[in-house]
Image (tube, rainbow, N blue to C red; front, top):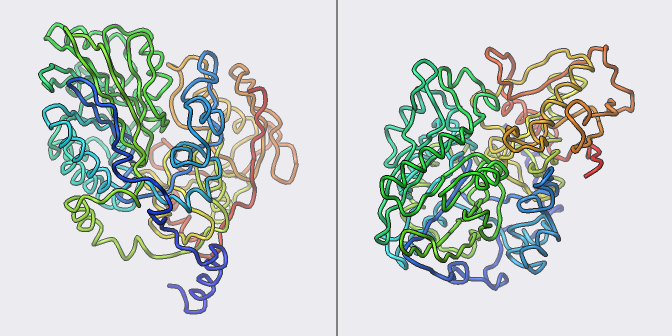
Amino acid sequence: MQSRREFLQLATITAMLIGGKSWSAVAAKQEISENDLLKFDSKGQITLLHITDIHGQLKPVFFRPPSENFGIGKYEGIPPHLVGKVFLDYFGIEPNTPLAYAHTMLDYIPLAREYGKLGGLDRTASLIKNIRAERGEEKVLLLDGGDTWQGSYTSLKTQGEDMLEAMNLLKPDAMVGHWEFTLGQDRLSELIDKIDFPFLGGNVFDTEWDEPVFESTSYFEKGGVKIAVIGQHFPYTPIANPRYLVEGWSFGIRPEIIQKNINKAKKNGAEVVVLLSHNGFDVDQKLASILDNVDVVLTGHTHDAIPRAIKIKNTLLLSSGSHGKYLGRIDLKIDNGKVVDFSSNLIPIFSDVIQPDPEMARLIDKIREPYEEECNRVVGAAETLLYRRGNFGGPWDSVICDAIIQERDTEISLSPGFRWGTTLLPGQKITIDDIYSQTSMNYPEVYRTEMSGETIKNLLEDVCDNIFNPDPFFQQGGDMVRVGGMTYTCQPKNTMGNRINDLKLSNGEKIESQKKYTVGGWGSINPEVEGPPIYKLLENYVSNEKIIKPKYNNPVTVKGI
């Protein structure tokens, strides 16, 4: 409980940091309207709408795009591995515009103050209803790319029920999953039984009988055209997340199974084949280059956002960002069972511009009402911009690493390279909602252990290969593990075992391979980990520090890329 003195002190500092300005953008300043966002070159008989990686965010958010998004090998320097001015130039976007703000980190703070938050499922619902009305529901297919039921205070407390209710109202036609599996098999089954649409994934098999666990394909007729949607769950779930949560299930990319399901769909009369995937952008770029007869890949997992679909061979590939910031759209014109024309767009959901859908807004209020007071409880304020997304980390990650070192009394801290987690502007209050948006998960224990310098290096090398292996089929998701209390040099283009060098403690002392160091971390995939939950630890740290900024910046020096 804050004392009155602490409350007034925090309020004074917050006012000083934000200069007394309101965070909510004025629509008149933005020079954009809901009609502007909905403008589209409609084509043909079919409209595909795509949302993905919402991560439990029911309400509008700030989410800063990354400063680093490195591609390796043949994927270097092409979408989605473009940031900043290079991204704007490639896609023909003018700087200091709404689209520049939505897609890049350039001038992020002033543009965020001008254009406000993005997302909010009530705004998403408005856009979807408008498009369904304009095109006719019989032409529109809405698909959810997964990572929907995890990532917020309410999603943790309800174990995904909040997002399930909201998505049932939004009425997607199918979904796939990744973090959904971290709810555990029993809870996952309960929720699947409650959704009004299929949970598709042809790449998960029972290890005892080698039989598919889920349906692979759903068939739809839209605009007089037969469409097959083939689902693909995140292929490395038992590696990136605890295996014990999916015991008895085998995952994998399984391109041969995908091709088999495509062939079956075509044999069953599908004129259009859509792969609804949670593989990640580069995995799906490679798949699009080797699969036959797949017309569209709607990809997720890597949180990449590109303004329009790219074409690989005869396949359109679109990634629709994360945290509810965007709604992806592809229109298809079909003639004699072939795609003969298309148009595409990624609609940024500017929350101050779009009129909330009343029905969804009421449901969100109902879902959050039991938790609203706790969610809005203020525990501190951000002195600097706090964000997470980036290949090697962001200030929020550094704060979490600082908290682990202080609260668990360790020399070094490790924090998983999760891509989910929203952004706070300088001067914004830090609430319980914000704490859980960085840490909400079902295996949150903060461990404390000893590791040799050699073990630390090998761990970093292993994670680095998962991210920067030149073959996307060996990239297992996430960004680089974040570190606190130490620094190192990374050369992503080097071979396995030779990417990580110059390991030092933050005081400049060299980390010795045979010496033991006290290390704290969270998000361990091992069973029976002991320690306080990360969200309680972070809350305690922020409550004590009050005004938050990282103690150490840029712990990683990147070379050769």
